[in-house]
Amino acid sequence: MNDLQPSHPVLSARGLCREFSLTEGRSLEVLRHLDLDIHEAEMVAIVGLSGVGKSTLLHCIGLLDTPSSGQLIYHKDGQTWRSPGLDEAQRCALRNQFIGFVFQFFHLLNDLDVLENVMLPAIVGTPKAEWKQRKHEVEARARSLLDTVGLSGREKQAPGTLSGGERQRVAIARALINNPRLLLCDEPTGNLDSNTSEKIHTLLRQLHEDFGTSILVVTHDPDLASRADRRLAMIDGRFESAADGTDR
Ligand SMILES: Nc1ncnc2c1ncn2[C@@H]1O[C@H](COP(=O)(O)OP(=O)(O)OP(=O)(O)O)[C@@H](O)[C@H]1O
Ligand SMILES: [Mg+2]
Image 1 (cartoon, rainbow, N blue to C red):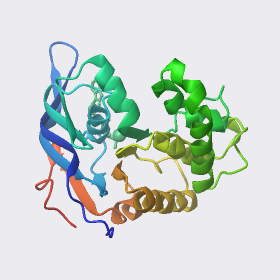
Image 2 (image 1 turned 120 degrees about the vertical axis):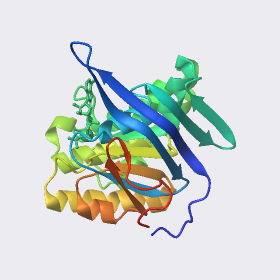
Image 3 (image 1 turned 135 degrees about the vertical axis):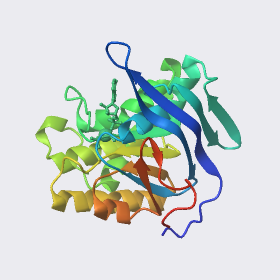
Image 4 (image 1 turned 90 degrees about the vertical axis):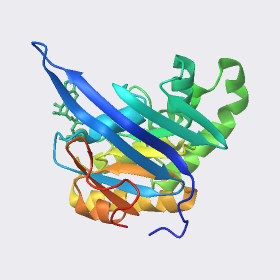
């Protein structure tokens, strides 16, 4: 358990539903009136069987997918954003500034070197006119994050020349470049051997404690789940017990 006591929510989901249309008029109800609160400086693990809707939930929270109904509420520095109700510019800004996303298969760009991959969300999120001013500060932060994840000296390499664990560490540094409030990790060690997984688990926990970032991690890995402050089991498109009262 983290020393920092969770306080205000950074993210709330209320009555979240996601239904997919299938062929011949059929549909699949994946998320069913799901409620969830993630608090400041809290690390929460989501576990559940394959196909239960864990990635779907993360994609909805990360604004990569749109729920069929229900509400997502994001809190930052006394401000509140509610979805639905956001225009495209607000969705992009939240995705870029509020949320960091770590995928199972890294999703790094091989045409860019390691340093450029880490800097990319800051480049995308900075108006062109301001980039010249910000470039040095962003580059320094990217180098410092690469140092934190143990990849100092690898800045100029192409991601394709790194091991799986090293690529995931680059992806974690990239997810943190804009100092997000909420880091969403979808099976971040699902593609890695147990030794490398252990290093990623330690790193996530360390980043969580150093930066106070709230982390929501989907995992099949009991070791990673056990490091979270709270574990939630997803069954039938919602959480087994109340989002706030489980397994601390
Ligand atoms: N775009 C889509 N169209 C139709 N069905 C979809 C779509 N995306 C996901 N699904 C279905 O929704 C269900 C939940 O998928 P999801 O990827 O969220 O599961 P998961 O819990 O992450 O599983 P895993 O542990 O295997 O990654 C699955 O039955 C999947 O086939
Ligand atoms: Mg999944």
